[in-house]
Image (tube, rainbow, N blue to C red; front, side, top):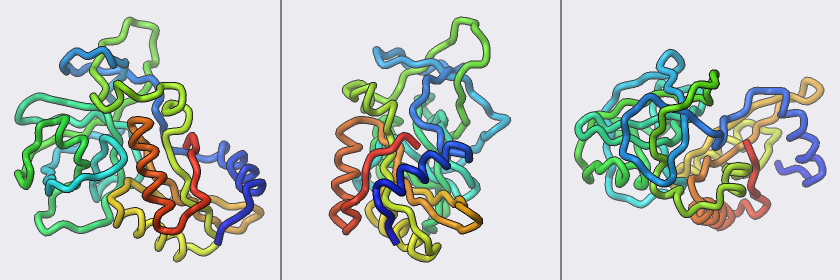
Length: 234
């Protein structure tokens, strides 16, 4: 069940008072990653999220930039993903994993696997640590953003790194839309909210790491029938 653009605009205003997914905010880190011209600052927050797990990349190309999914994650988080075997790390997103794997390992995007030098079909140990914007004025220590973000348009991606697939008044329809996004290998989440005590479910894909990946994501979403999908900030 889709709503008019005018109604969606009103709904998004109301959503500003509820919890939203963190987008591409400036971040800080205590990690010693390789230096890059795309450096940003971020603080590691292991008290919020700190998971050690094994990942498997099957070699398939995925959309959406750098992301990883894990069954123990309930809410999307901006994270530092570290390859324990070689010390490489990248900034990305973690989502709840709903798709079961034969190996029981977490799933990782092709961009993240390549950046972390994870070989195809090779089980690799990684650490996933939440990151947040700095809380002090001390000079931050920096880590490099993913290489895929170097050629991105900072203004566009920072303001609208997500894509809204649709808002649904029937939860089962939202779940079906989410399943379609998973079949496209897109990172997706369902956000629930209420208006006048009536429940609604919002399906959102992202965040995208670059303008190109965001365009490809939107193209894929529209190809399966969600022609009203558009870029959103959260």
